[in-house]
Amino acid sequence: MMRRVIVRPEAVDDLHAAFDWYESQYPGLGRDFAREISRCIDSIAETPLLYAQVDGDIRRALARKFPFGVYYLTNDDVTVVLAVLHCARDPDTWKTRG
Image (cartoon, rainbow, N blue to C red):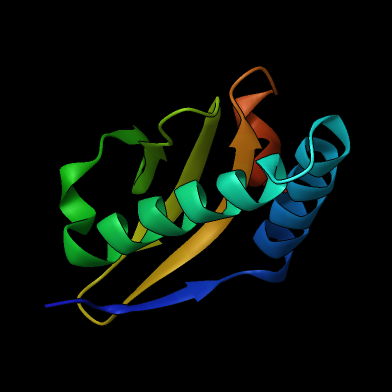
């Protein structure tokens, strides 16, 4: 059963920035990136406890083909995506988000 997923505005901003960058590198690559992150979020919705805890209750799912991690929290009712970050960025970036 897929659970409800909320993507925080900051994570949407992360997605848009990465999409724009990939699209500027090669037309269509941004679309491929967006599809991969969507696949990753669908996987999180189906099996949220599959992915490793990286800090307390925060979990991270790694994307395929792109060096990005999706950071999220989950409980019985909902999963909240906090950030979509390039793996070379400081992983604590999401901690500064309210």
